[in-house]
Image 1 (cartoon, rainbow, N blue to C red):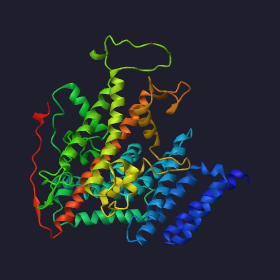
Image 2: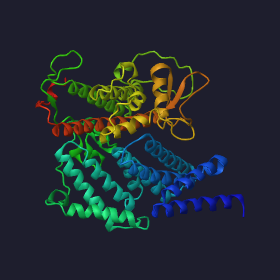
Image 3: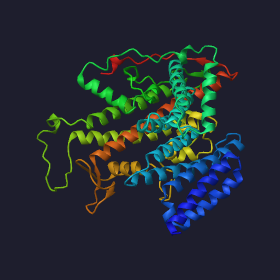
Image 4: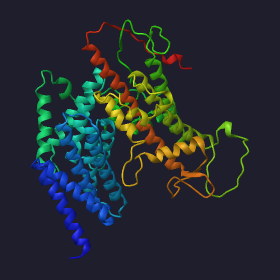
Length: 503
């Protein structure tokens, strides 16, 4: 037997052991197998780059993390977070390796993506998980495990949102997806999943009033704008799932989703409360103004990203008669359109800092202003881990500072590198597909293709959108706590800022 055959057999054996021990709930033995796999990986570079081996590690660490979390009464302590992070590491590694081969296994890719998304769900990142499930179903819309988990995650998101209409509509989509999953079973649907999905469907059908989930999902058709540019912009936002609207997280694209209703629905406060900044009565609380700033900057960055992706037949009028030197032949692009893309990225990245500032202020975490960063907030002792939506935000922020994978880098490190270069150094944007990763070249510039800049900006749009939605839903969770408190509170009605004033 060759070395390759021996490695293959050992990897398969590990996969079988993980399945068997998990099904029989032998979690301590599972932990020993995982430890053995890590030792084997560290001793053999070949197996560390095996798609299936990393897939089995991701699966095993995810299952063991579930066991530890349940043993700790569902608390997010450091050990659970570390195990969950390891699971994500290996799923991501497996996916990267599978994508890198000349003839990738599409069925394996579906399983990797689905199991990775399942870990995101457990961590509370429902919005990112739905993004992954949409990719799964885009590859194969009959993949029943993907469809079932997509429906289950819509149910979780429905229970998090703060709008009654969205709550009902998301549950409706969830019910229909789950029902489709159990009616179109394929060989990847295992018995436990089928039972879990079927139980949820039964619970829906046992509701006293099933009308709102059982009725056909039909939305009236709305106009997408008064100009060709506006219509094109709103279609682009819908396609990329970038509206601040939880309905834009479903697979279906409806004109009814093409707006940004996300907001604080209600806010109650102790009538003796005062603004912590100046001691004056908080009328209204500054959270509304802070949120207005966050939303408007997000919308502005989203629009800049859109406009930067639209090439015009002619230069922008402000770019005419601007003298630039033509000193190289490396397809470097200079234009206002490119600057719009760079500005969009910088604005979006700064919003992450402002979201952290909001969290520090609203939840009175107590960090000094200079220490209010993603790392500072998430590592703070007073970070409220009992707020489910705030823990969802925690996992998003972790992407920018926690070490993921063998490279000992944050998962979104490329975004951080690009932001630093755009803010403090010099970046050359190249036309078309620049065939190298973002890096510093011998000319001391950072180089990136226009396509990569746009892809990174859209990724950042997704992450900031996700963060803003969790932030609003976390505030709603605090409102629920207040409603259960006996403190004397006052409710303040807040009017909407008219569109006509946005001139």
